[in-house]
Image 1 (tube, rainbow, N blue to C red):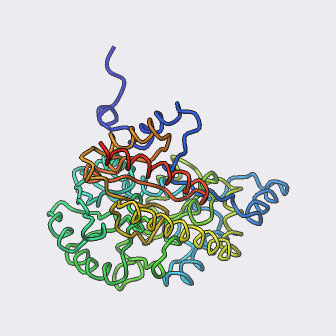
Image 2 (image 1 turned 120 degrees about the vertical axis):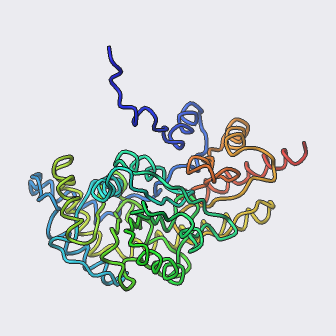
Length: 388
């Protein structure tokens, strides 16, 4: 029998996060600081709207693009929060999470062999989605000395005559790094000069602690070059509702909609009605969650300083990315020994790219009590390492 599996799928590495948590799942009572999921419940008024939609029998397909009411609210939200202007008809597509938008966005943009610049460390899906779309990933390794921001020099060094797309993953998972307006302006001229397109993953846009998030799509000349991807999972604690969206030029969104039409049909109807409520009346909920995350962020940064663990200060998402290079252990070794000896689970930095070696991703989407217990155990572990 011939091999039934496509080579490009066989060659794809499994998620480093899932690989590590297969180990974690076998341990009883481990404290996990590894999952990138809010520890808050979806706010009640949003859940109520989803329940009400079921009670009213709203269990039908929506249009392929999604509920028009939701698309209108997304346009209102992006205009009021980020000064990005989109038309609800033609420039907005409702997707099954941000992950679907990444996938079909790349498939809509890429011809075989065209290059996609992917800054790393970053979310695990960008590279395999590029490959599955027929593109060629070009990895740009971000550095701690630059606060893991994408610099103009690094971008320019990666551009070739085959480059078509830049993925812009900020605020960043796993580092918590952000790109401020000045940073974006410095790379926007390169993007226009080199005639590139941007896939801007802004799923953590509401979780920015230094100043308000700036979308590259709001800069002059960038809307027509950008697919803006966002969703409801992180800011509104709606991970299981599986709802995201993509905004961009009509000629691109129409092709993404065609792919979405054949693969998905439409995003979950109940989730879409709940999302309308989230956008209309959820700002205070987001503010409360952001304040709580920021408290936890500051707590971890203080504790790392106290224990002498180097970590640049992140201003976005809900992750910290401390360096463990001084212990002369790989990220995998450190994470596995920490789990075995202290029953605390973190994610090796290499799960997010080779340049994540020497770092750990620690999520603070957990209660302060859990974080305090975990930090005490990490302190014990480091103290034991230093005594050896």
